[in-house]
Every structure is written in C-alpha cells, then in structure tokens.
Length: 256
Ligand SMILES: C[S@@+](CC[C@H](N)C(=O)[O-])C[C@H]1O[C@@H](n2cnc3c(N)ncnc32)[C@H](O)[C@@H]1O
Image (tube, rainbow, N blue to C red; front, top):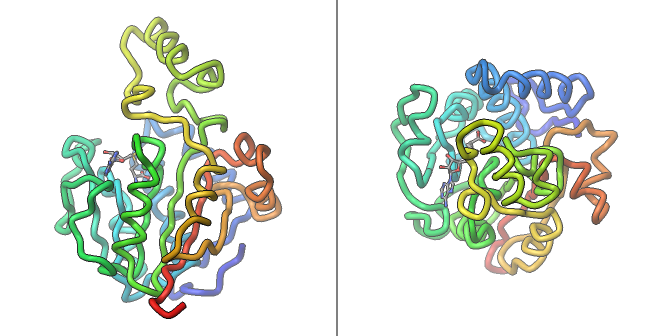
C-alpha cells in the first residue's frame, strides 16, 4: 500500500516491514513513554488516512479522539481537525489539554448535521463501545457524499484484543479481568462488558456491506506490512492475525 495520493510535503504512507517494526517498538513503550508511542501512532495514522482521502483542506472528525495526540499530525497535513470524545477525563490523559475544536459528546449521537465532514475517522474506539455499529452509522451520516469514513479497531481474537488483560482474554473476558485484578491488585482500566467488548472483523465487514449510503472500499490490517495485507480478506484468519482492522468506506452521492 504505497501512497501517492495526498502525499504533499509529508511522507507518503508506506506499509513496509520497517514501519511495522517501528510501530511495534513504540507500542512496547506505551506505558513508559506515552508521548513517543502516541506521537508515532498519530503520525502514522495521519499518513494512512491521507492515503485514502487527501487531508489538505479537508474538514475531518475524529470520533473518540481521546487526549488529542492526533490533532497536530492531522493538522500538519492540512486538515481542519475536530474531535469528539465521550469522556472529559480521557481528553486530559497524560496531562494534556483539549484542543480548540474538541467536543464532549457520544459517538453514538454525534451533535453534527448530516454530511458535515469530508472525513470521519475513528481509531481504537469501536471496541470500547457497547453498540459499535450505531456509532459507525453516525460516522456515515455526518460524512458528505464523496467523503470517506475510516474505522480502525482492535480485534477481540487478536493478540491485544483483551488490552491489558491479554492474552488471557481468549479464555473469556471476565475471567481475564479477574486474573488481572489478582495479579495487579486493582481492576483493569478497560472493563470487559462495560468499556471493552469483543468485536470482530466479520461484524465490521457485515456492517459495511449493509450500508446503503456508503460503499466499502477496503479492508486492511492497520499495522501489518503490505505483503501481509491479504490476511484481512480471509475470514477467521483475519480475526487472529490482523491485530487491528481498518474499514474504509466512501459515502455515496444521492444518485449513486
Ligand atoms: C483507546 S482510546 C483511543 C484514543 C485515540 N483515538 C487513539 O487512537 O489513540 C478510546 C477513546 O474512545 C473514547 N470513547 C469511548 N466510548 C466512546 C463513545 N461512545 N463516544 C465517543 N468516544 C468514546 C474514550 O473516551 C477514549 O478516549
């Protein structure tokens, strides 16, 4: 997946093995150096979104933007960045302050008119939402015809599906949470059944294909190198192999 679209002055998106290794190293530092991890993730995510929809001049919505690490990376590529998050505490994580266009609201009921944005994006949020496809429907609704919807989420059956309770989540979310609490003396931040849900690529693809006002353009693994992109197209295998899947949809115009 080497991009030419939207490359501008920034580096084009290239899903190389080196890029995957770099992201994985940064991921290992998430707890000790969140600025490094989220900074790299933000830059990589902006490059990936730019590949699918040129960000220069685009008005974009980041649903579940959290502490706003992504704002600078998207703005550096020329986007006007609006972020929505349901949790004011998450917006201030790691001592950060919410940016100027940050809105406190639920992704399941976005406070924007139909067709307001060129791009609706969501990174690592749907797995934290009890009714993820309602939020995804909302993302489609607020995207203009011809605009792009990009949903990227962590797959339950992947190595990080249980988040901090991984890999024990494969034996059951509640059991993994109890084990975590026994070992750490406190419950996990992501509570199974409350703020962490088992979500699959299959369900996302089914949702995307059922859309009448948007067309599924691509299903790709977010972090894997291009030679492994095929894994996202293989049912069952993709649930375990992809770690995180990206669904890319284009909003149809009224006539199409
Ligand atoms: C794991 S963080 C992801 C933050 C950022 N998007 C990223 O990729 O680093 C998940 C975020 O989703 C937010 N969130 C969870 N449920 C939400 C909902 N229903 N509507 C909007 N945001 C939600 C949380 O508050 C949190 O900030």
